[in-house]
Length: 238
Ligand SMILES: [Zn+2]
View (cartoon, protein in one colour):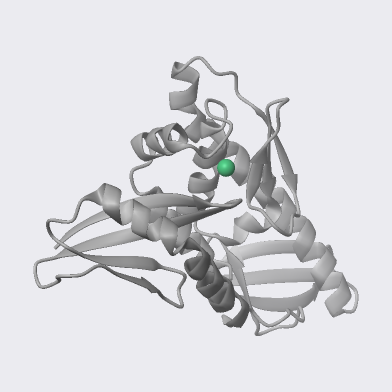
């Protein structure tokens, strides 16, 4: 089966869609799935430009569907910071094991997150220790990812942006006009491939400030599977 990807802008939103070209299909159909996938089923001979126009015409409906699925998707229950519950780190669930120790520490071994607290263990204390550990890991890993992903941009003559790590509620990353790349500290819970997607997306803004066709051409060129990574990120951290 022949497939392709497309993007349309709707107000400040970006709608990414996948097209499946089917020999059995005579009309064009647009579906929005609960995993936030927008799927267009089209006849094999359908002109991609016509598909873009059709998606644009239905953008308001697609946006409403996506918002509804986002609202009703099961969210991770609030963490209690007690032994036995799971915590995400680089896309994997790790079982938390809390114990008393001589010093406060966090260790990651064989799928377990071992947290030692000085004195009696209390969830509040575990939370503080764990959050500090997550922040440290985020800073280290994001810096590595930025170094790796920056290589093609260095070749294109750009200066490496400075990295800031922040807890943000509405976005995964941003690039300021003063060339600071800010990444959401929660990204440390996502698979590394997803962190790379966010970094490459933001780095593409060094060249194109908006999300126009040139921006997506560069993103596609540097990371052909960006849409897959984007979807994985949305699914991983909903
Ligand atoms: Zn952007």
